[in-house]
Length: 320
Image (cartoon, rainbow, N blue to C red; front, side, top):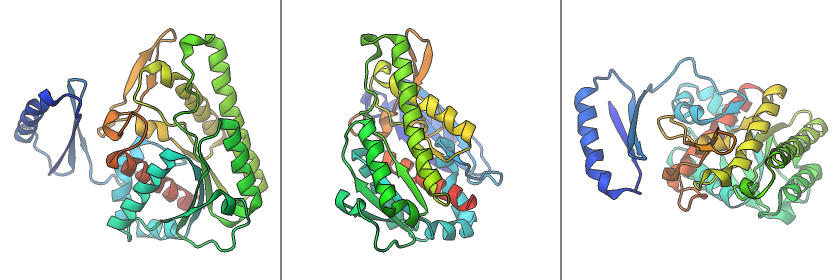
């Protein structure tokens, strides 16, 4: 049995209690195998026995925090899927959080290139705006297009794919930012807020569908909007966008990398949510354990999002 400890640095005074919990759990739990993940946050502890391998698990078109738990062992047991991933190629448009995700991809590849075969090649916006000369399997072509507003991100992504990337790679992803939809709902009309969030989700998905129709063989991957670790009002517009995008992708049965879900669940699967007024909705928030500044990822957060990417790559391989 192995024990993984994930503790919050926000409350140093509870470290002694954390060690006591470890002793108690080791002494009381008798496990045949697997992991015990102990998360301590907000003065509470959460423990869950996670099987090393679930034979029924298989990545689906929607990837979330559950895939992060199981994908590594899944790949160990399915070398044919790893080989399929190694034959894929990707075009990825992003901003600063995208750099974090790519750091995680490179870290996994460095540690175990046989299990995590994808390599990252950074390209400039000027290169991304031209037809690719040579696309190598097993490569992520990543362009940091900065952080313009949502409409500009959609337009740039459409331009990049039209220039030839949509016909040359296996899959494409256009990641939005946690700075998008940063409206504080208390300052705006409530119904108007929801309408705006839903409209943005519809526009985002419309662009992805347009790209898909122009490139029938291409795997077009949508992503939910990243979150922050700040108070609920700052995240609710992102939550509303994500819920609408989840609904759309579910109805259309399309690929969705649910970044927000991965970010907002503790290692044991416990969701990090807080009540939003006046709606009463339990809205998602970024788990601070994964972050350096309440928005960007630390090494643990980078690896989580990178594993989610591999789960999506496996799903694409299985659905090819």
